[in-house]
Amino acid sequence: MLDIEPQQAAGKVLFHFSMSLDGFVAGPNHAMDWLTGVTGREGVEEEYIETTGAVLGGRNGWDRDPNARPYSEDWKGAIFVLTHHPEDATPADGVTFLNCDVAEAVRIGLEAADGKNLEVLSPTIGRQLLERGLIDEIDLHIAPILLGDGIRLFDNPGGQPIRLRHAHGSHPFAEVDVRYHLAAEA
Image 1 (spheres, rainbow, N blue to C red):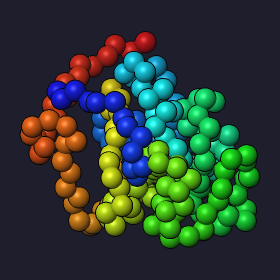
Image 2 (cartoon, one colour; image 1 turned 90 degrees about the vertical axis):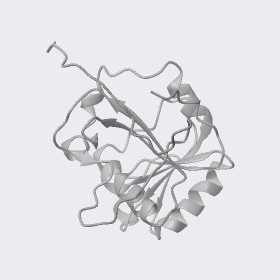
Image 3 (cartoon, helix red, strand yellow; image 1 turned 90 degrees about the horizontal axis):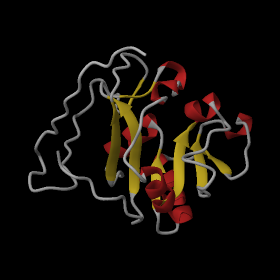
């Protein structure tokens, strides 16, 4: 498998998620308990704390847990929640509710990110931005679990495929090989 270079703060629009092997970024009703016990690359959280200037999320995820913040309390960036009804959203410090086009939300988020990356933490918003060519990079952490149900990273029945290329390596259109064994139930 290709080695991944550390994330860089480069003013990118970054579609970033931990994802199950079968393509879900959240369980039913936006549940995230399936990530319990999953480990990541050493220093990965600190990498994203350093390179993320702002976050753009959606109302469904916000309503599920308005107290949730990306990463840890060490991250202090701006949070934007895109919604058609900001007037009835649960307010929180450091959170701005936007009722605008997704392209305008990206413009606002990038300005707030001040040269760092704007992370898109909503599959619905991410799909809209992908369709408009407004995502610079997709950064996924594949968790060793098959959920079978929940919220997909890219749910676009009947839509056009979006071709991707590897960000690193000499074979930008090669598939990635992943091999897992079944884990014994704990």
